[in-house]
Image 1: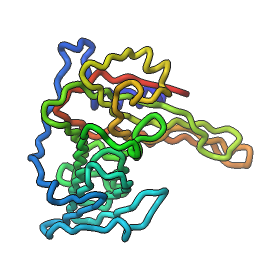
Image 2: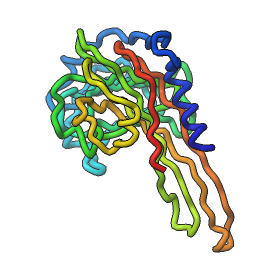
Image 3: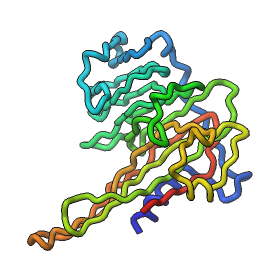
Amino acid sequence: MLATAGLAVAAAVIDANDEEEEAEQPKESSTPPAEEDSLTEEDGLTVATGDAEPERIDPETLEEEFGARVFEGTEEDETVYIDADTTSEFLIRLGSGGADTVVTGLGQSINTIDEETEDGADSADTVRLIYTPGQPEEVFERSGVRGSFRMDEEDTLEIEFPEGSGGTILPVYYISQYYPADACCSSGEDHALELVYVPEGVEYSEEDLVSNYDTSWLERGMVPLAELYLGQSGWVDYSHDGGTVYEYDNITNPPVLLSGLSFAPQITIDTT
């Protein structure tokens, strides 16, 4: 039942008609072209807070968590620029308020979720994910892409490609099992949505993708762009220690997805 609810969430955001020829095409990005070329440098991080001048930040001055340099946002509106071709890994946390924007390439971790108050229309955040061909191998790991995104459903993820690019974006909804506690009886599910670029001419079947889900996207001629972490659901039984049984479900909707390319019908890979 929990898995079904999660699938409905994703389907509501990525509206794919049963008949592809009648599918509604995604909207073009409404964000005007940014002048980020002058605001980024190799392996650099640049932050503009409110109306202040952009400030270049030396990654070596940032704290490190699990190999990633961490930038913590403030309550002000902030725009964070990351070099789209960098091999450095950043963790950007912008959940303290404000209508924030991140301009980045592949392989970074971005968290725009406000844990205390949900984003409203006047404080929704935007991530502009820029794909350029020939990405360095450092941004890919296991069978997917390094890093993950956590975003409120009011936020927007804009995926940008070079002019003239063809192909589609394939949304893949993952459900996997984990064990949430050291209780003798417990079970949980992780939910995530991965967005994969399928260049023109690359063919695939849903049956093959589901049956061979551990095959690298790169080996298929595709490019994993981003993984959106959507949360967990499950239950834990502590009754054997005099405690209680409780259930939880913190699965969230994905953000609004925009791109100049169309979205293919979503597939689901359930490994539970």
